[in-house]
Length: 100
Image 1: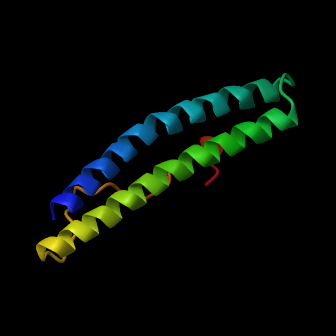
Image 2: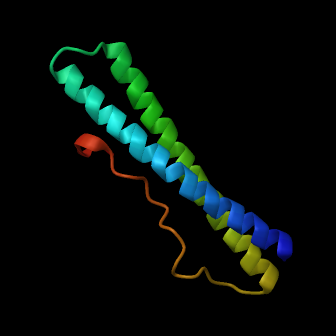
């Protein structure tokens, strides 16, 4: 059970570490799109920014998944059957421009 708790704490830290990366990458993507609208960015740069944003979002979602798995394992080890209401939502962050 102690190992399960440590895994839960580590997974929660993973979520906290991945959030700023998503925010920073989202801002970089927004700035690049603004440059592209003025014709100052190449299609390759736009594609690279989109790829970076997708990767950061995927890392965030993987961290959330790891947390939920660790939480479920800890609950199982303790004999509990439900997930507490303070578990983070497993929804992808909104994309700029309203694209899912």
